[in-house]
Length: 87
Image (cartoon, rainbow, N blue to C red; front, side, top):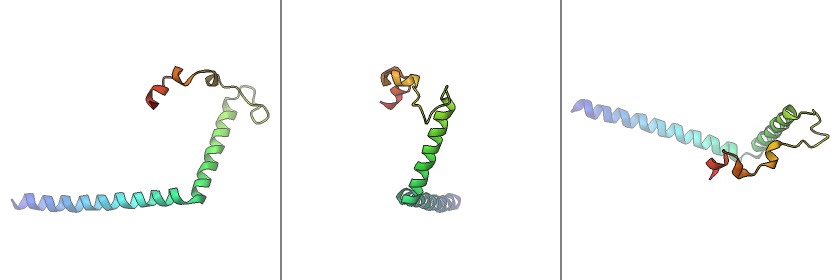
């Protein structure tokens, strides 16, 4: 019986430590999401990556000067198998 009580106390301490860890992670995420400078840098990085990817797939290598046409722009969203996961 003493062993069971001891395991329960140890489990309780470990679960409290995990809860505190989760809370600190949550607060860190909240601070990041509420920081306008951080969000500006994230959006800027995403724009850079998107522009780089578009330049990589442009067959004529003229992306900023000419707008490229994607094959997917002619398809309906319903035609795409990934669209089924959205709904």
